[in-house]
Length: 343
Ligand SMILES: Cc1cc2nc3c(=O)[nH]c(=O)nc-3n(C[C@H](O)[C@H](O)[C@H](O)COP(=O)(O)OP(=O)(O)OC[C@H]3O[C@@H](n4cnc5c(N)ncnc54)[C@H](O)[C@@H]3O)c2cc1C
Image 1 (spheres, rainbow, N blue to C red):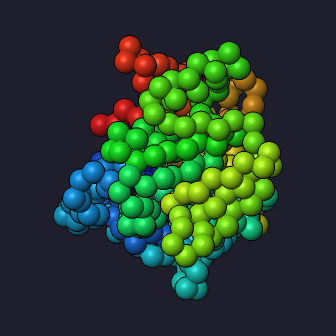
Image 2 (tube, rainbow, N blue to C red):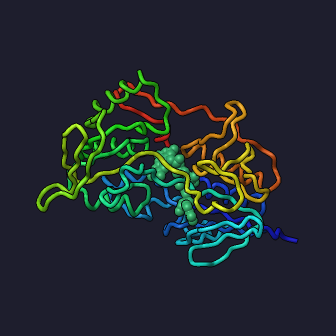
Image 3 (cartoon, rainbow, N blue to C red):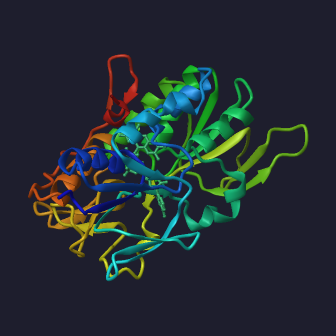
């Protein structure tokens, strides 16, 4: 008799897709459903900076062709936003009120861009870069050789910054404590890395706070930024790169323990027997550090998807603490993050 398991995965990113692949290998007769709030199939967000120098569209970013999902009987429910998980009834609720039953659930919902409360009022004047649609918007409004102001400068932002500079755009980086996130940078290294960014052509502004961001007057640049030291600059686009917040609001009230992310033991199981978590949304117990912690980046996240799927299908394997990825300056004076190496 075939498997009666229905594996449901919330999240269509690296962790969710890697898990679906291993679940299908290990339980060929099961039902697998991926649920995603997004409209596209799994695409590589890491390559979005290509939009600025190549004539490409969303098809060029897809990781698997449509046939992959058909051949592997992986049902992808797009445009479906999970609002609640009822762990007792093993059901999840979608925003359009549909209920979906699972045998085992994997939460791989990643993270959303973090915006601190003091920047909230300026949110309508800021542009993100975490989705294909938001990346296209920036490409469309940014004039040739236009100016981008980046607030913070986490590794996603710095990746975009180096691409924009080499494509002839101007980039101004306003540093905050999230600059270089999620790398842990010592204070003596920080000055070296800022120096490397300047050598790469990025204008760096340090030690200021944003006082106001305004829409530029007609005929002027689209954005006007005022700092607390009286300095002001004009730009075409202002983008926050201030790290990620786990996307786990829908787990509120489910009874599953969470801190900032979903708490999982080293086998990636949450405090509920039938719910697992992988990727940017989870905080994994580290016996060495005696605390729960996040591990970012595609290599870590991919591994988590594999471990979760294997454990959901009867294995007992564990996450081994990964060494932190280090930023470095290469022989060409370029700042390099290991997160930027993809395959
Ligand atoms: C723009 C961007 C670029 C990045 N670039 C790199 C890089 O170059 N190198 C690197 O190593 N790391 C990069 N990362 C960092 C990141 O740590 C991971 O590599 C990876 O993107 C995380 O994968 P994930 O599967 O955990 O989640 P994600 O890829 O974030 O996927 C989350 C999925 O969950 C879905 N979702 C969330 N909430 C809900 C809900 N309520 N209902 C339904 N669906 C929901 C989303 O629609 C999405 O499909 C990048 C992250 C971003 C945002």
